[in-house]
Amino acid sequence: MNQTIGDRPILFESNSQDSDDSSLSQMVDLIADTFGIHIKPHYQDTLKKNLFTRIRALGLCSLNDYYQFLVARNQLVTVATEWRELISLLTVTETYFFRDEGQMSLLKNQLLPELIERKTVLSLTQRNPANGEFSRPTLRLWSAGCSTGEEAYSLAILVKELIPDNQTWDILILGTDINQPAIALAQQGIYSDWSFRTTTPEIKNRYFRSHKQGWKIDSAIQAMVTFQPGNLMQDNYPAYASSIHDFDLIICRNVFIYFDFNAIAQVIDKFYCSLTPGGFLLTGHTELYGQTTEPFQVKNFPQSAVYQKPTSLDEQSKVLNTITPAAIESRETEISSPSLPSLETGFDISPNTQTLLDAAKESLIQEAYADVIQIAEQLIALVPQHFQAYCLMAEAYANFGDYSQASQACQQALQIDPLAIEPYHLLAQIAEEQGERDSAKLFLKRIIYLAPNSVTAHLELGSIYEREGNEKQAQKTWRSLLEILENLPQQAIDSHNQQTTAELKAHVLKHLNSTTHEP
Image (tube, rainbow, N blue to C red):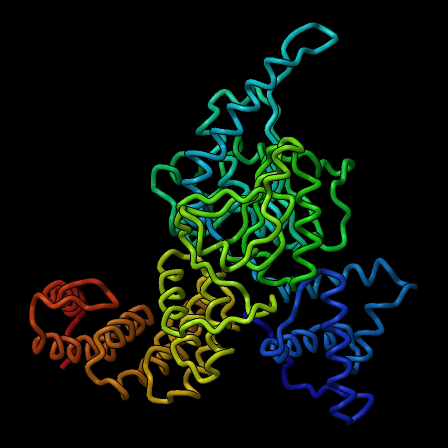
């Protein structure tokens, strides 16, 4: 949840709005130059709130003061510390184990086995000159933009499953991120249940143990992973001093959504130079569409596109010069994510809005949330008052854990259709997730006012009252819900809860009977 300015007024050097806008523009450029993060215009209000959070913390007076502080050369240590504070507000750390089932399946069943076989064979062709023994096989994996570490640990678990005797290998699994508090959490290896929402019970029980703060990663898996800060934009890669070189696999997902076109190009080049010949780059599904990816070879699988560094000059000659919309459409292999170029790439496209909407919905089902946001932005660019686009964007941001952006998208949807209940449902869920029960109840009551027979709103409101110990209001809400259910077909299935009316009635009656009935 993004912080706000608070009640104390901020003093400005000038009352000129032009000066304020100019300083904000300077900050946007400075952030882009320093981290590659491209702040889009419709996110700049949120950026401004975050900047003033830091202005207050430092006791400064204006955006210009803050800008001058960050570019100062006489207090580099202090400035570096401040950048760390700011970047923690600008980036989303929401992630979870085994995110994107399709890509994880591709890693487990194809990419990693191919790398393991290749490196095993390679080790049998090389001998240690000191003792004449065969060299130990090596495997080097990099989770770039690893956030709080779930992706890197997921890779370690896959490697452990595929190489049970991994002690006979030299394995490096590296996680880097610009957000140093996130790196610190990754190093602790302690996670809440929310990080396991797509993890099988078998994996969770095998590789995690109960901890007073949640679940702690198995020490053997934790020892397989190294975490360190890293700035993809400013750091020079390959970097031999920090072991960032000759990787067999680089995963960089849901990072490029922050970057502009030129920044992405620079990082792609760094990744290419940091891969060993034949190494793979795996990104979010649509993050490189419209981007020149040569000299990578593009390999298309049903689960994802993969970018491979060629192994010889002959193979390099076969590499596509660019990925264009026509090339994407002509591929025989179906790509699980929609083949949609970004509007920022300069292509002259006029996609059918229904096609885009269907693609966004499918991406949401597939949990490709970065894709949902990108497609929704394209829809809004075509149809600024597109209600469903804002709703889909809100849901995607909520799944990312960026509740501020999710709430903002909900409010924009409500400006288009003030009587819609869908945004209120999500706002209620966000409020409850953040422990703001009063706000959650308010949103749910608005839904019930607009749609008196809403099963889901009554169900959630009754549950909140019950958790608060407000038995009277809980009983009242359960009885109202029971009346609604009595008038519905017993085999009808509620779209939100995926339960039949009969199942919901049994659930409500259980709650009514579990507490003292009040007249």
